[in-house]
Image 1 (cartoon, rainbow, N blue to C red):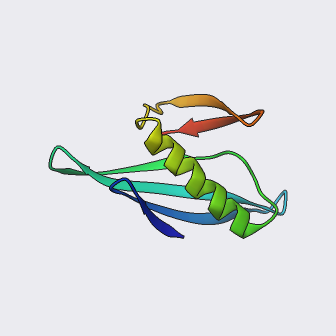
Image 2 (cartoon, rainbow, N blue to C red; image 1 turned 60 degrees about the vertical axis):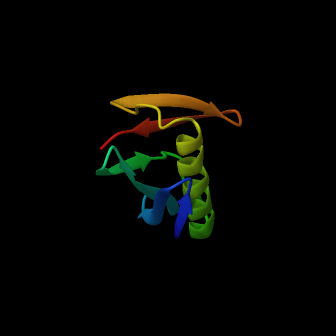
Length: 91
């Protein structure tokens, strides 16, 4: 799933988590800043039973990260979201 948001290209794919029979979103955000191309991989540790739900939630996660001003995610930042804790890591 690909989408643009506020000048950022968001690419979301999914990966199966075999032990749980669930799906994990894999998120990349690409944008230009100060004349340089930037890329970051975001990690949303939540798991979803339905692949499409993982894609949609990954897209929502990336948009929120952009809307929040692209906070530094290194090495790990935990945020509260709808009563659950979500961990983000910078690759």
